[in-house]
Image (cartoon, rainbow, N blue to C red; front, top):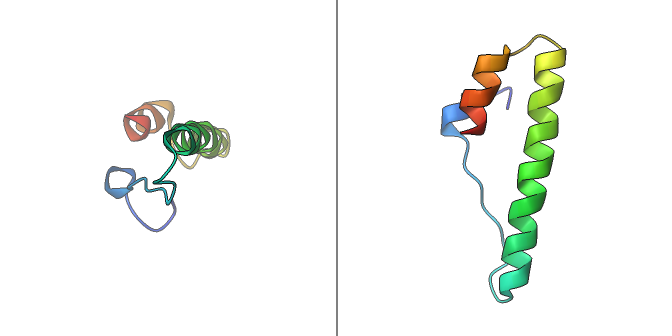
Length: 56
């Protein structure tokens, strides 16, 4: 997240045979991306509006 703009980030998963793994990988990605964005807002690297835009 420090190297590229948030608008250029891409999610990918190698869970392709079992649909539940795709769902689980997506949920984990959302959870940890939200935590990372929160840390950047708290650390004042991003403001709240930038974090919201990055989450979209």
